[in-house]
Image (cartoon, rainbow, N blue to C red; front, side, top):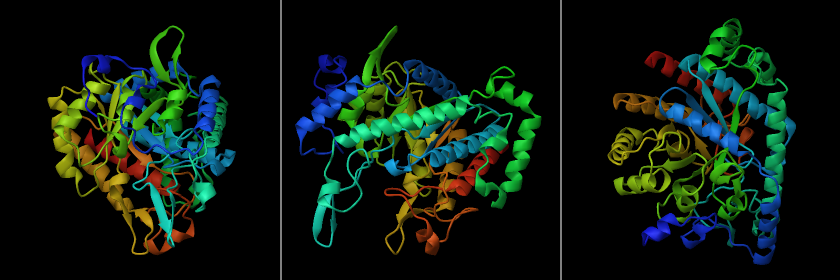
Length: 454
């Protein structure tokens, strides 16, 4: 739907997205029940605060200038059943370990943004799924429906919105308690060792690095920009795809002593490839909130589309406001990324650039199992660094789907399975994730790339 006049452009409210085409939205059989749940969500406390959002936006502006590096990582789609202390702690440990490795390589602060505490909805390529002649709605994530292939499970249930909010709150509360309690204290990196470390091929290298960090804590504190004694206070932020717009709207609010509207379900909402139409509902929603926002970009973009994203989401061209998360695939990035960079420059954009090496490298095995090859993932990251550097700018971060568990979903790497071994511990209901060893190996490879590129 084209923007018809200036009045429509300037008139924004948390529900103005409803005047635009809204893709990937569930159909609820009971609209009255949905409205009742949304009314309840509007009254519940926010999940994050405006000052946390403002802090992240400031840090992302520094990352856009090359002074920080972003690690945006976590589950492809969280599951309610995984809202357990051990799994949350393991995810936090992996993010901490990866960020330490990246700090050592980049010699700059790392912004940790977890795909958790809200990553419960997922877009689907088809609205329906057929098995043995039976057609049912596709599974769209635990906040919308359930994965079991029955009519009852696949019906969109508004009560799941409340369950998603509650589990997001529980996850955030536990993470904040861990961090405040010293779990992330850089003086004691052994606190966030995972059980697997002693058996990993990367164990010796990781422990040498952790020991070096302990011995060089003064240097680390200088790099992190904090005074001695404050390094136990590590910032953690949350991110999720702003897919279910009614849910996002219900927690979009004004706050005291700050202008504008804030999405208080997450610090950093982003839109994916299936919902990034510049004239669509998702971009319309993002343009009016004060949060830093992200847009996934794939091979099919046009220069006109890029210019419209800039104008809608970052009309004042403010560093830290807009992040472009590019996802092309190892075989297409060399052709597509330079064109994207040129289109952004032509539009006067000043975004933060993040590489998503996961989604462009997804494939099906001969047996129909969705997977990714570790070598393709790293190849895309490696090319992204080289292309940005050749074009006179900096890659500001990486967007990784991973887990702290011993899954077998992606092929290769130091701790990854062969294609035949994918079925040993394949848990994901949607996309394949790196396991903890593959994640740490990728962090080491990225760190070496940054260190050698200085």
